[in-house]
Length: 89
Image (cartoon, rainbow, N blue to C red; front, side, top):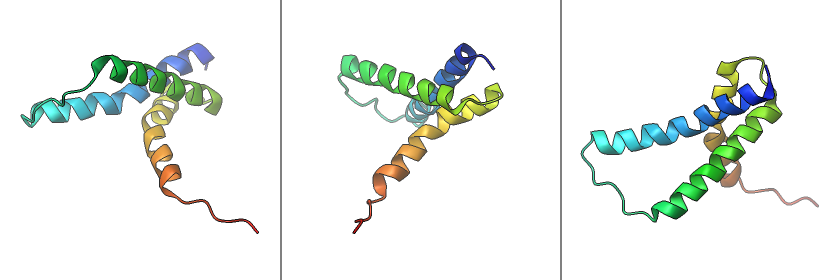
């Protein structure tokens, strides 16, 4: 697969969980959080670029794998952040 297509599918995978999160907020009737939308947008774009770069680095052989990498990166990062590094002696 060409890197440009992987990049696009990584973008789609990266933004999908965020779209689902906002859909869940709206569909339950909860109030939309008051955010600094400019700052939120900047971080969202940076995050999508990071996800897409990781998808390209993963070098998937199909669009579904690129989508999977983009969608699963938040879970991978969360696990890495929660695990405390062990002391090496």
